Image (cartoon, rainbow over all chains, first blue to last red):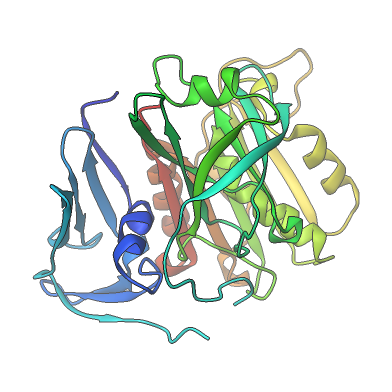
Length: 92
Length: 251
């Protein structure tokens, strides 16, 4: 196992988000609370490490934290202070 | 969107290996029969879960390489990572008739279907070809003539996955062009590129930004970042450049 931090795309969080949300979330657009840029979550940068039970999603433009995702000890916790809003397309 | 019927919950499904195909020295394709598969969009992935007799579980994500037109036959191509705990099992131990658990489809950002406009510029590094192959196969299955170009970087000729199928599809003359670059070893008389993908190569192999191509880049992180930056420098808007980076997966 590689123990260093990996930089991936927000796409890589799709499975974990889908465990919790009914909607597919990586296609959802979100606004960065720091710089205001708007992009799908899947297009942002995701940092993961094989040693940690979570991941950090950062804004690709200003590098500030958008979301912190943790799955450990039988619960999920999502830190969301870096997003002003999230927008989802209604699914049929 | 096709196949995007809302699944209330992502569930683990049993999948049976119906075929194993050699894809060069380090990769194998597993064709899986997945009863009740809800369909997918090209570019989506699945999670695969293995359970040892003592209950220990290991889970990995793999891009789906087959098109939605294959219905309940879902194929993944696995690159063997010698030090990994999952990939050697999938490539060497798992045989036809054996089962594993799978859930999906997962993801909705790095996807393309014929309902979306083109032209389409696909750039692959190594096994990053897999989700792009689902798009190419879907395009062929639908008889689409959306102008499509694939630029595929591999270490050597034998490391090119799906080479025969790509040759066949490009040979049909339905608007698919394939460019290769071999970064380590080139066979005698090689007429493709023989260096890492750079801006000049993207300019020649790709479409002019004025044609508003959709660029989909998949491969190892350094390649994806270099390619995505170069595409934007060439004048492609960032929202027309979609990326999927394969980190070191832990195998």
